Image (cartoon, helix red, strand yellow):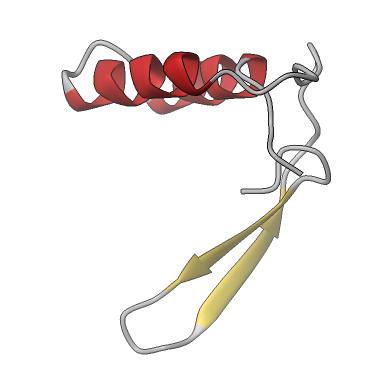
Length: 66
């Protein structure tokens, strides 16, 4: 998922791909990357406390690496 541009590519078991274009985040993406915030978002997802829509928001707020 490319949060800044919106496209997402899904790789299927048969080797084919499917591309989707999603809207850009309404709240923006942090300029600085916060690895601890990404880890916390992933851990929350693994523990079942965070669902995908919230994960996207949390990871966007954690910033991107260019």
